[in-house]
Image (cartoon, rainbow, N blue to C red; front, side):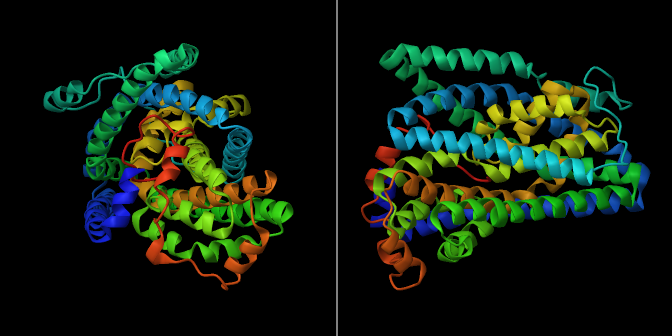
Length: 455
């Protein structure tokens, strides 16, 4: 991509630009942490005041709900187009897509299993969310909440998006301008969502204060339990599932691969974004010995379709909300939710707040009364973003090696030299010669991708 060539030519300017972006992201991160702490303190010390702040959380939930339909529509339409284009790349594209669908489904299922074992959120018994019920607030609060548009039903939107996506496929080249226009629309939608996420500290403050005010320390314990369980699940998924698969197929130790990608892990941890390491992953996978065509198709496609960490998060967070509201989901509801998340999670590809919107969409489609619990997740979502991003990144790195092995497009001797440290990666020429990769990868990626932030 041209921008990558530009980065190679002007590293200083790029560093300044990236640094500026990092600062903004960190300001939001810090603001959310401060809001959560203050909300918990207000709820513990002044319970009645905390309960009265609930409209702040409700307002933020309404803003997220407002964005669900356009996000689902744009991402599903573009996602179907991406699948068609990736499949045309040939054996590599088809194999990669099949692997991504299987692994994403498996990750979602693991989230459900762990959630059913630990029962996160159990005992909180929060009040159910009823959008038609007038809250006991003054007229000013009612007026302000009434400004925010009502939500659009999710399942009809999903159905319409699938029909539009396949219709555009059938149109061939005639549908390309429409796909491009929807791609630009997606950029606009995600830009609005990113703007909304800057209100997250206010929403988190109100939601946490209200929950802690109503339930006391139990709320803090439940949120901590979910976070610890999520981090542990991601760690086990990487070490056992991805590590075991990598060992069986290639004989490679996943910890050697992770050591090789150490700088990328530090970058992801500091930015909470796996997208920040995308150009480096392309360059490093080629240096490792995977052929350019395999890397050029697998890595960009994986960044949209292989979100293992996000998948685990979506299912565990859904069960947490359901238990917290005192209405646990039965097995049938869990399976239908899993099927919905398999499709809708393709819209959670690294944009700040998209995962939260996808979670809200799943709950709204299956149990609208559970939406009130999303306010709690707002407060701890940022604390789980690093684990999501690291798991997503590792899943895509492992996928690239596996696909390269299956299609016999990997140099085993080069792999051993690199992982043993005998042929170190040259940081000075990291982006040299990689401009053509995004051209090839565009066949497997979306027509237009917004600026990514939080995986």
